[in-house]
Structures are given as structure tokens and as C-alpha cells.
Amino acid sequence: MSGEAIQSVLYYNEAEAFVESLRTFQIKDIGSDKWELQREHVEKLNIQAVVDATNNVEESIKELLLTHEKIPTLIHELIALDLWKRNVLPKILDMEFNAETSFPSYVVMFYEAILVGLLEVLLFHSECNEAAGDALHDLLQYCQSKLVWLVAGDEKWKDITTERNNIEGAKNELIRRHKKISFDVSLKCIAIVRYIGEHSKTVSLGITTRLLNTYDFPAIFASLIDLPPWRVRGEKGQWYKYDTNKWNEVSHEEVYNLSKLEGQLWIGILQFLMSEHCQANYQLNSNNQAAILKLRSHFHPRVLDALPALLDLQRYLEELSLVNTPSSRPPLILEQLPQFYTALENHCQGKWRDIANKHYKNLFCMSRERLKKQADKFASTYDMDVISDLISEPPKCEQCGDGAAKRCSSCATAWYCGRECQVKHWSRHKEACKVISRSLKDKTQDM
Image 1 (cartoon, rainbow, N blue to C red):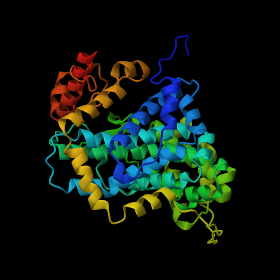
Image 2 (tube, rainbow, N blue to C red; image 1 turned 90 degrees about the vertical axis):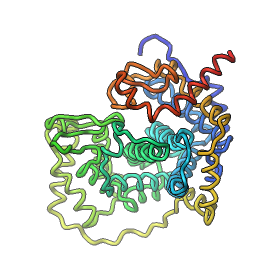
Image 3 (cartoon, one colour; image 1 turned 60 degrees about the vertical axis):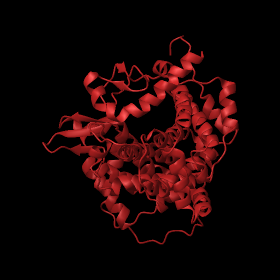
Image 4 (tube, rainbow, N blue to C red; image 1 turned 30 degrees about the vertical axis):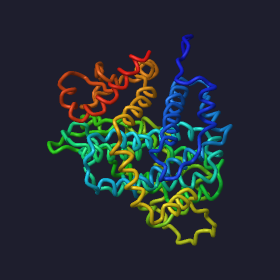
């Protein structure tokens, strides 16, 4: 690093106050004023945590969350959002949808990506895995559902995540954004699972058992490498790979270049199958052995050149293919159930429809005054003049995903590569733009 001072999003005392105030919410409280305030705080903490990690400086947010024992709280809030998206959002979408904008509900859904991103930064460290404690049971269940969705899904991934369509209407825009966020979040779960596996010695045996045997993440990782959802072939035979939150057209030769995402998977599998601790606890059977052995066809020279340690894994799999897996009875282990999922679902049993009706009114029938207030908070959190100085990568065009050099002159939150993409994207951007730009204008007049 150079001698220049690194700009911060939060002062230390401010960050500490935000961390101390973190608390758990019930699903019925999602979207409330207190919940919104905490969401704003967590988003700012996440930005600061990413800045600290990217610049390789003292990670004050991590230390504060450890000191105040708030990592389980973050996991609880993630699980609450997951259950909201499963049980409340579908009921809202079934209602007569007359909302002018999906901006408020999009902010709620985007919060899931914020929480997952923050946990990804934290769980890189062994002490954070240890501090998460029994909450890792819930986090692993969450990650398993996301990765199984990727493995088993028959969706046309490029079609549902592309920014190049011309869908109009608040409801259709919300559905598309929901799928896009779900896809991005699911991919981030790969790194989270890999970090938990890497630090499995620091967690309980119950967590390790759930990681390796109950959910069988080694077999899930192998299936993702065998049938990667981030790599698709177009109708004309061209190849696309999903990287840095966008689809890129690649040549046939570039298809097998190891991406960051694929590197995470291979390192995770290497940890699951080759580390002494995981080998001692992983129960092989005919099903997961068959899934794992499919990896033998994916040891391309470019993969081995990028990760030479995979040569040992390649030899191990060749030896494994010559062995008949014994049908041994797994050891008896009393597993703890995911506590957050169980408690939250029990609290909402028989109340999902009432919660959906309440949230429809709060999120889709929002008054202009409240919508402006939310836009004020959003504009304050994502001060683009500050964030643009902190990020190392150039911004991406909202329409096509390519590098962008121009911002929307009204709201300053959307980036575009040129006038053509801005015009195409306007039908989806205009409502949020009007709200945020009005908020910024009012704020400027008040100063």
C-alpha cells in the first residue's frame, strides 16, 4: 500500500455504536422503521468491512462483531429473510399488483446479498467461524438450499439473470430482480461453505458432520463443477461465462480457463477430500463416490497449471475408482437442529397470509412521504462520490454489464457505458431515479 490514507465509510465510534445496536427481528417486523434502520447500519458496516479487507488493513468491523458477539445475529437476520422470500414474497406476488415501483421491496431483497457478502468476508477468518457457534447449523442449511437450487435447477440461467431484456412493470421487474439476486447469492455461498470447511477444526463435530455428511457438500461441489450453471452455450454455439456479476462471451479456448468461482470450488473439494480432519469424518457411499469420481474428466491442463495441488487429488480419485466403497454404518451422532429456522417458522405458523397482507401494504402501498424517507436513507448509505473512491474495479453498465464511465445525472446511482444503454434501461430505472433524485434535491436545498 502507498502512504496515502485510506478513506473510511464509518468512524470507529460510529461503527461500534452500529454493532452494539444489532438485534434480531421477527419476520413480521421486516420492513418496519426499526428494521430499516438496522438494515441501513449493516449495509454501511458491510461497505467498510469490504474496504478494510480489500486494502489489507486492520479489519475493525470484524473485531467489533467478534467483541460484541454479533455474528450469530447476522446469521439470524439472513435466515429470517430467507423464510420471508420463501413464504411471504410468493403470497404478495399472487395478489393484485398495482404498485408503481418495486424499489422498496427490492431494497429488502438486496439486504440478503448484503448479509451474505458480509458473512463471506467474516468467515474467511477461523475466529469468526468459532464465534458463529451453533448458528453455523442454520447457515449451512441456508447454503445447502441455495447450492442444491443451482445443481437441480432447470432454469436458463443466462436468460433469468441477464440485464438485456425489456421487461416492464413493477411486478415483472421485481420477479427478475429476485431471480438475479438469488443467483448471485447462491454463488457467494460457495465461498462461505469453503471457508467453514477450511476451518472445520475450530467448530464442533456436529457442524463438521452436517457439512460433510448431512448435506454432503463434497458431492454438491463436485456436481457444480460437472454441470456449472455459470457456463452456458448460446443458440449459435457461442459460449458465455458468468463472472463479476455479469455474463461474458468467451471463446472456446477461454471456456476452460479457471475463474475465481471455479477456483473456490476446487480448493473446497481439495479441503474436503484431502485434509486429514475431513477425511476422518467424511462417510463415502456409492452415491457420493459416483458424483466425486466425475471430477476425473475435469482435470484439464489449464486447471492443473492454475492449481498444481490438484495433482494429488487427481491421483487420489484414480485410486478411489479402483476401490469398492464399503457399506459401513455411520457412527451415531446426535445432531442439533438449526435453531433459527425452527424458532422463526414456529413463530409464524398459521400467520403467513396475515404477514403477507401487512407487508404488501407497507412495501407496495407506501406513501410518497415514506418512499422519499427511504430514498434519503438509500442515497445516504450509497454516497457514490465516496464509494467510487473506495472501489478498485470500474463500475458496470446497468443495461449490458460492460465497463461504465457515465452516471445518471439525476440520481448518480446508476452507471452506463453510453446513451443507448441508458435509454434502454430507463423504463426500469425511472421510478427509483425519480424518488432518489427528488431526495437528493431536497437534501441539497436544506443545506
